[in-house]
Amino acid sequence: MHIIPQSWSHLHILISVFPTIGFAIGIGFYIAGLRTKNDLTRKACLVLFALLGLLAIPIYISGAGAMTAAATNTRFSKDMIAAHYNWGLGALAILVIAGLVAGIELWRSWQARRPPSDPFRAVLLLSAAALVLTAVASEYGFPINHREFELLVTIPDISTPQAWSHAHVVLNHIPTAGFVFALAFFTLALLTNNDGMKRGSLILLVICCVMGVPTYVAGTAAMWALTQPTIPEISKAVINSHRDMALWTLFGMAFTGAAAWIELWRSRSTGSLSKPALNLVLLFAVVTLGLMTETGHRGGLINHPEIRTAADILPTNPDAGVSMALETTMKEMVWFVPWQTVHFFGYCLIFGSATAVMLRVLGIWKSLSFAAVHRLLVLGFLGVLMNVISGMLMMLSDSYRYVVSDTTFAPKIALIAIGAIAVLYFSASDRLWKVQAGEDAPRSAKWVAAVVLLAWMGVIVCGRMLPYI
Amino acid sequence: MELQIVLAVIVLNSCVLGIVFLAAYWFNRQARPSAR
Image 1: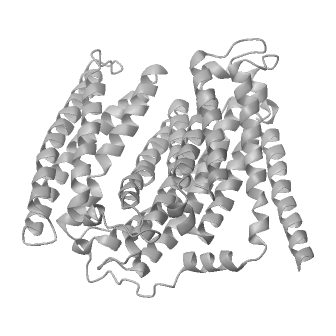
Image 2 (image 1 turned 60 degrees about the vertical axis):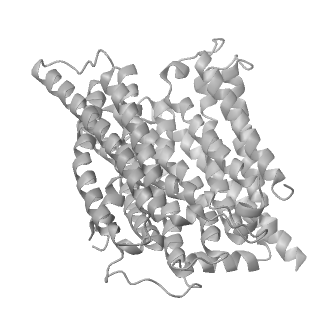
Image 3 (image 1 turned 90 degrees about the vertical axis):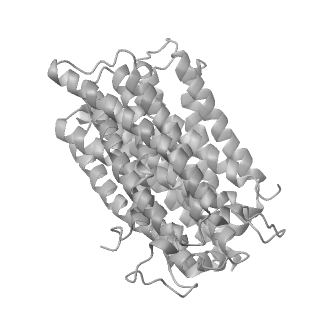
């Protein structure tokens, strides 16, 4: 069990990312619980906030232990540690208060045998404050060890901006910690047979899986930022072993996200969630979380010499591994470039089905009910799956050019994430589902439709501009 | 050589699109309210 922390520093960096992601997810579920009058979801969120408040204790103790250990190490700047400590104390104070208020509300509702009410929205406001403050404290914490963020030396056509490394360090926690919370909500929903929470968990799992794409891309760019020009202490072999595991995680996320998305879409028409499909999602999610844990551990080994133990045997061959082999194969395969037409078929499917569904929502094609056009969405979804796989292979074949030289790649990936997440609204909204032929869609749905269309348009434009800008 | 590449591209693309349309057909069948 090499992933179990052996030092205060390791424990601190492992647990301190959970409050920020936990509050972001908890607030989302809490608002959904309020709007759908789902008492169990709100109770579960209060328990989550109370547990996150309790997490402040091990975070503080491990942080103090890590600070003592870092005091004698010249690698760490005292000013940076002091800034992180001050913000951290403030964040932990709000964390404890938010957890306490959530706990009191839970206890009061249990005593009075009524659903939690939170009339002044105190839990919501305090949780939002805890979310912001823990995020700020983390931002002061990351650069203590990640000194590479400060490297500003740029050699044209060789260096990669360190903003990518920073983005990867932040982004990777969304799918990883997100999966832990998503699985907790999902398991509770399955045990209590709460359909609203099941749907919420499926949506969260899809969002985490979508966020895996920008995380992987930012990671690829971070690899270039850390290895070209080389940085002492950072080994390409260690990065490659992290990258190999990340590739398997990407496959795991494709399976989990696909199973969750299809069940969300399918259950709209049938009116009920299928038990075997939900169990399949659970199975995929558990396996993927296992892969993610190992990926995260290997990622941590890249640039955290302070957490390495004697049991961590680091790889030394920079050319070993699946990712390197795949890169070489993609470069040498002569028919791979013409076969990339599959990527074009993929975006025709995405844009075609998105346009048809969005035009109905925007009111141009009112002769059909929303339920009738909703069926087309699965074609667009299969297009996304097709293009994520073909696109990732294309990126692997020439990653430096795509992620570093081509400036429109980053906005393209950001727009993919926005477009893919926004589409979830069309399988989630009850009001929209009931829109009959001849009726107007709700105004909020029209805004989401506009965002979806513009995002996917932007993806195509940025993709076409890749070789030129 | 070029002919082989063209053939490989046609076959691969047809396979992928075939699988996608079959999958869409199958999922739509599963999504019929009567399939409950």
